[in-house]
Length: 102
Image (cartoon, rainbow, N blue to C red; front, side, top):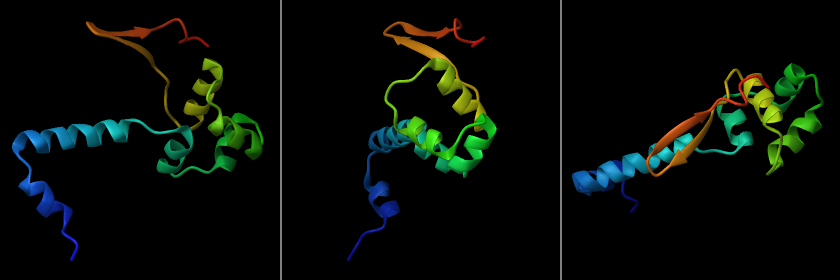
């Protein structure tokens, strides 16, 4: 018989529960563009309309592994968001502002 997740989670030590929660948060903060669009309940057609493009172009964009910052910014803004570029270093984070006016 399958066990409920809440039962399994309750058996974890407090440290284990904290690690599981942290990893869950990381996974929620990381997702491909297509999954992000779907999570926001938007269609490729809706994004294409905002961008003034065709649905097929949005589909191709979602599967690219390399694109211009301006293209990514436009896609994110079409979903109602903003794009921040942050560099992470061992001693801290730095927000890159060079791309804010693109």
